[in-house]
Length: 116
Image 1: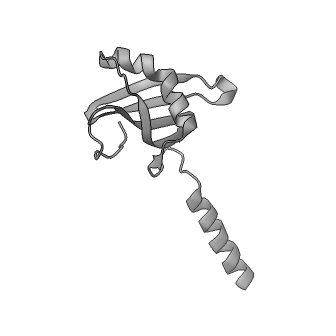
Image 2: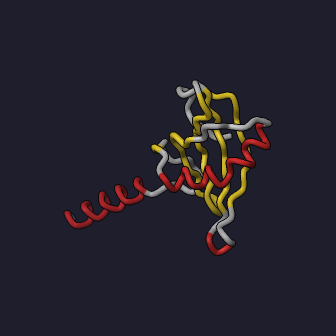
Image 3: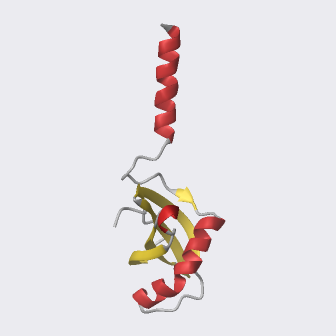
């Protein structure tokens, strides 16, 4: 009986740590890999926003597992200005390409990243 209870608790803790397909993860601090994704999309973001950004620093992000991954990223673009960008990355078996899906601007440092 104890083995069953321990197994059940362990299974629940493992499932809680896994991202839910379709749901957004908790916000995380941006790392070098997220910055690299943003750098690859910068020209597309500038074109869509109709502005050039001297500063383009990923600060935080959430992900959503779909048939690939959606990245929802808060990007500092200078001064007190931020934008939120959504980037879709195809699965590696489909080439892993990146696509800018949407942007939201202007944003502030304090505005949470939400689905858009």
